[in-house]
Amino acid sequence: MGTRTAEGRSRGLKQAARCVLLAVLAIGLIVPASFAENRAAGNLRRTYFELPKYLPVLKKLFGEDHETATESRPYWRKNLFRRVGGDQIYLLTTWWPDEFGEVRFTLPIALAAVAASRTGSDPDAWDLRTARRMQAWSTGGRLDAAKFLSKLGESGPAFLLVSSTYLISRWVGNERIERATSLSAEALLNGTIYVGILKRVMRRTRPFGGGTGEFFVSDPPPGQSNGSYPSGHATGAFAIAAVFSHEFRDHRWVPWVAYGTAGLIALSRVSLGRHFPTDIVTGAILGDSLGRMVSHRSASHTEGLDPMWARFQPYVNPENRAIGAGYLQR
Image (cartoon, rainbow, N blue to C red; front, top):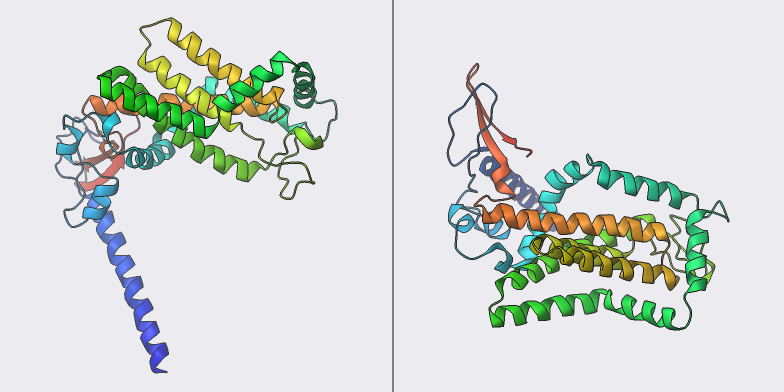
């Protein structure tokens, strides 16, 4: 009885501690550091929020006070994993809602999803037929080129190339390449997260080994794999292409080379029988979006705005003098 009572008290104390922590966090997010004058009833004006001083762990992990937001150290030189952690909140609260409202993002993914859904049930589906034709076409030198491009687009070599270029550019003092490679690493890590989630959810069989592109196959037959959708190679390649195209947008040839190389890497996966065309289309759209996202966050931070916490805004309703907090969508 004594042991059970002690265990019960321990659980009760832990639950109470969790409740206190959640309450303190809620207060820290709702109570602003300062209030701005209202232009009109219901309007929000930008102001900075500070997490309470008694939450140093949460503040260190994700929060940024005014001094951090305006310090001289560039955004791309800050901790990579901390930036990626902040990206997840920004993606879910702001970036993805905005992207799904854009035709250039939703239309290609929707068309790819419709084409992909026909594989498995239709032996003459366009996705399956095109993948087999490209695989049959890739022989001799074309097959060797596809293998080389596929190796270049793997996660390990890609991260190695990006990190080594970052270190060399920092050593020689080329800040522009340093910024581009640092943001590319951030985009690659974000792509790895989302590709991993989608692969586990979709569980689509790959073309090799007799796979016909069925979705939600938890236990594929021997010789087959269920990690086809979307293409991680295409996601990573287009994420890097988007970052370099933005950072070197004053050079017209950079987007052509960047996106052209990314396209060849993506097509190599179809030629090798590792992916269907719709896999690389979805991966390319996803990677391009993530690359543009990190460039946007970097630009917002450079302008002196905290890209995550600065969107939480206070408001005061003059009619009933109610005080609250809102989230500003830009």
